Amino acid sequence: MDAGPAAGQTLAGRCRHRRGVQARPDPQDRGLSRRCRQAAAAAGRSPYRRRRRAPCPGRHPCALAEPRRSRRHRRFPDRGALRLSRQPLLTVDAALALIGARIAVPAGCETVPVAGAAGRVLARPVLASEALPAADNSAVDGYALHGTGDNACRLVPGRAAAGHPFPHALAAGEAVRILTGAVVPDGTSAVLMQEQALIEGDILRWQGDLRPGANIRRKGEVLRPGEAALPAELRLTPVHLGLLADLGVTEVGVRPRLRVALLSSGDELRPAGAPKAAHQVTDSNRPMLRGFLADLGCEVKDGPILPDDRAAIAQALREAAASADLVITTAGMSVGEEDHIPAILHGEGEMIFHRLALKPGRPMGLGLLGGTPVLGLPGNPGAVAVTFALIGQMLVRHLAGEAPRPLPRYTVPAGFAYEKPAGDRALLPARLNGGKLERVARNAAGNLAWGGDAEGFADIAEATTSIAPGDPVGFIPFAGALR
Ligand SMILES: Nc1nc2c(c(=O)[nH]1)N[C@H]1C(S)=C(S)[C@@H](COP(=O)(O)OP(=O)(O)OC[C@H]3O[C@@H](n4cnc5c(N)ncnc54)[C@H](O)[C@@H]3O)O[C@H]1N2
Ligand code: MOO
Image (cartoon, rainbow, N blue to C red; front, side, top):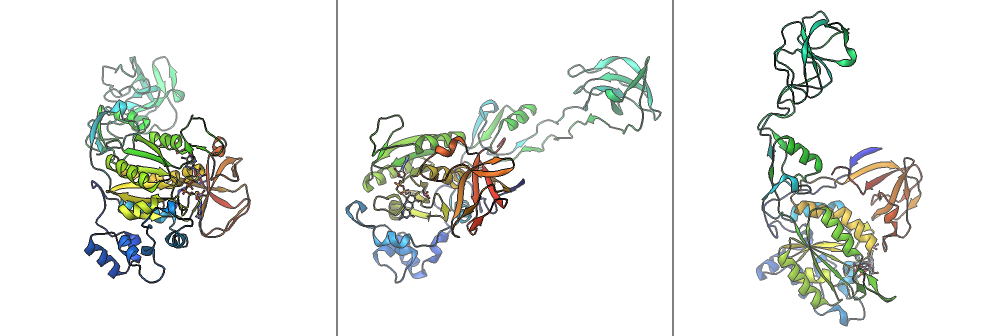
């Protein structure tokens, strides 16, 4: 199995300690004519709004903004939506690069006890305050000796054990019993492993060379005082907590918990656990997203289930954006007349990207409202799982102050055949079986029934049109071990 990061799947161009919209131009605005941009800037408006009122000739992204009236009152999708659906789609990698370039990381640092710091992101590096190890000590059970070059030493009474140092120095030709982890007595040149020791009376012998320093872990060989033990921007795992304890660190400076507001929309939705009729749908996206966000250490603010009403959604988005570091919505992101979220972002904020070359998950988008990022995920639960894995969690990690890091991705032999048109990247629930990747579901976008069997996603690149059994295929596992 080839381990390797997904090509290009990092967030490029980190920006730190800033909040809100960046000064850099929106890369998706580069397609606008200079006249459009200047006119918009002069009027203090988004160029999209400017263009909406006086469309430039030809099919152009800035002509694709929201309608001025609610889409509720239209029988058919408006022309803007129809044009939008014909726009060339952004790749996932390009969307991740836009996140790195356009989304500022909220500033701040709080000091927390190490015991409660699992999952938090270090705001500054942790320096070793003491040497690691703190003293020369034995790596094995055996005999500490002061060698003279003739493969024999005289055993002296006593013992060095972990927590119980031998109180005397070894003179030339002397040896003493030692256990793993014990501080080596002064004068020790090497430690002989017990398995290599030949003892006759009080004489210790061995065969072959015993290298000076053998089996001794030297003071400071792992970390010297003042050396960086952990870098800033690291999400702390239990392994790190153990290291911090080892270094005598009791408190660390971490980023504030990310406050994430969750909103779902759709007249058909009922909260989880509530009775529902056949035409109604349980809001399953919310518990799934709440779980993902809790795993990422976020403080989740549950918003209401919103009706398919533009004004109500706009109001809820404004309120959520004012009190959170990130707003995540589900549904209402496609091109139908009840898909209001892109239009609200175009009209009242900014759309950084919308619609990706990704299946499932194409309708997703990212915008800014009052400077707060708004991640619009599709409604279909399977698509929410895919888009959160590829984009959502990367955005959350970025906002939480984590250093950019690609998703774990491996190349494995396919155990299935698959065909698709070139254009969209396809993510298919899958699991490893006998070293080959198997698909576990056919229609996975609209449900989560594959969740019991899948271990991750088969990842099929945009340009790929066919996979035959045995071909190399990407695998993105759900679990990144010790991450
Ligand atoms: N003409 C086009 N139509 C559609 C396209 C397209 O490109 N052109 N894309 C399709 C794709 S792909 C998806 S995905 C959907 C997503 O659209 P929306 O984001 O606008 O979502 P809705 O239409 O509102 O809902 C889709 C589906 O998901 C169910 N849903 C919604 N919220 C939840 C929830 N919280 N928990 C569980 N299930 C939920 C909803 O009932 C619908 O069945 O658009 C396609 N159309
Ligand atoms: O991309 Mo949609 O997300 O297939 O269902």
